Image (tube, rainbow, N blue to C red; front, top):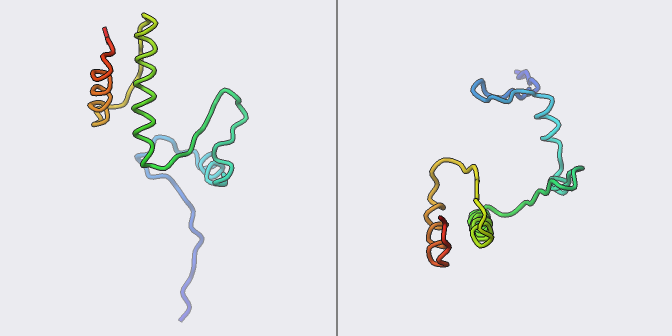
Length: 101
């Protein structure tokens, strides 16, 4: 008995707000070696292991806040919902005695 094979056609789940299958297919064709390449020189993409991401995120926020405070400037950021890493960031800021007025 032969089984009929059908070609798989990807479609995003109905709850996904971005549903442009042509754009998704284009992005899925990007090769690993090309993932960080972008035609806009001001837009930099860095690929790193998951284990390094939190460290880079926390240290980046720390130095942005510290630099602004040292210069007497206001620091404004849009950050995601509650995240345990914020406690680590607060600990670093407190340990370095950064005055987050």
